Image (tube, rainbow, N blue to C red):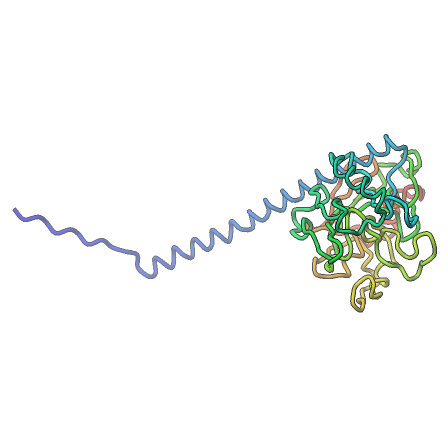
Length: 319
């Protein structure tokens, strides 16, 4: 009895194979936006949580020290903590007490903060960082020193030098926020600049303002590095100065100070609050609450000025 010959197996035809590939491509095309949405949502949630924890730390500092932290601890040359930011001084309240102690001990005999021997200057902290910006965990080497970055900046007020916000260069008590803590911005999102010249968390002098070079700031009050203002019309024209955007400065639209969308590779976008999220950015208010504000309000200078000032007497109604 002879064995029967096996039946030939039928493979995919070219058309069937192309159909399968097309189906797979369609499925991937449908899946990728969903995955990206999940990632974006996770990044937004993390940013919101970080901002809330920082706001709590600022309140804890106020409770312990009797006032909000200064934007820059001291401008007195030769003093310990020279140009230390508000983020540096609240380290004990974000579970970074040991790092604060190391930095403080070093500063007692080495007041100049931009030095490779200053450990805190080159230590990235996740609490300042937004997951949606892969540049923020970077340690940037400027040669004689390395710096690390923040995506969160204090709200110093309406414009450079006004010091009419919550985290500014005047000591502010909670009771002095006459416009109401729930109506006044305290901290907001803005990624580091494209050239890595702005957004240094530990010690940042800020952009050089050639229109205001008098003591005690001599043109640099921390704005752009550790604080931002909500209607700082002086910032965009200052970027034409070569110090702010080496080697020759850049020309920016006069309206670049307005809260609105930005790009990592556009140096002009260092001049305003923005975030790598869709259609807006997170802000912590003076009462510690965190809200996602949409860019639609950015064109309303009166609204943004009212949100940035602690005692301007304005009425704020968010859309």
